[in-house]
Length: 84
Image (cartoon, rainbow, N blue to C red; front, side, top):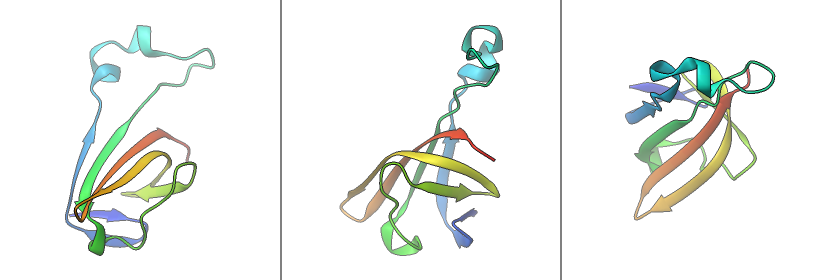
């Protein structure tokens, strides 16, 4: 169970492992890291299906929405770096 936009949702949440494998080469110019979060959940379980450019909170952290699609009732969200 994960908390997505303040609602407890049964979801699969995956984080890319490139930061864990190679911190030195993934650092941006400002020292931040590119972190992507992949979220798979039923659309009906979400508060809303966010649009590209929106913000989405997952487990207490806020991410920017890179992509959000509805594939036969399954929401597939690709979220960008943690913004707070």
